[in-house]
Amino acid sequence: MTQTTQSQIEAVRSFCEGLPNSVVKEAHVNDWGRFGNFEVFIVPKAATRHTTRQLAALVKKMLPKGAQLRACFPPDPVITKDFEGRTKVTGYARPYWALDIDYQIYDAESNRFSATA
Image (cartoon, rainbow, N blue to C red; front, side, top):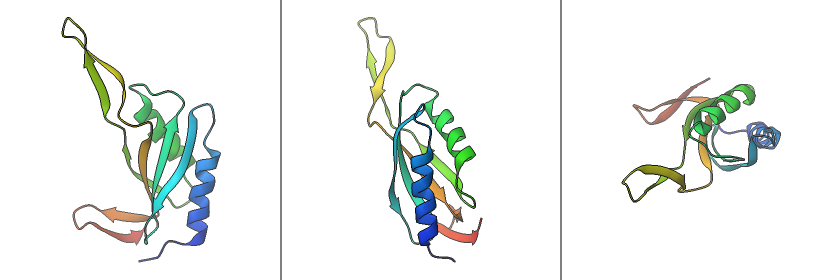
């Protein structure tokens, strides 16, 4: 297994800086692991029910060479009920989406990183 390299760290940082301002308000690397795995936080300009799908598609298109999107974790919706009992999403529990970006293949069954992607 390969360790996280400085070039991978710089590539993911550059990736965050290169996301279009028309869609993303801010993006940054929250954390990186030992095996080329990163957690990136993205705050979108507008949060809608389509944001998760839109961010995942944008990220997949713009990923650094050799990286892959493992998962995209949206925030929990804040749901309220009106006086008639109808529910409505009025916001989100946090302002950012968390994304797992990996340079190595992650095996969920064994909870380990394996061969290089």
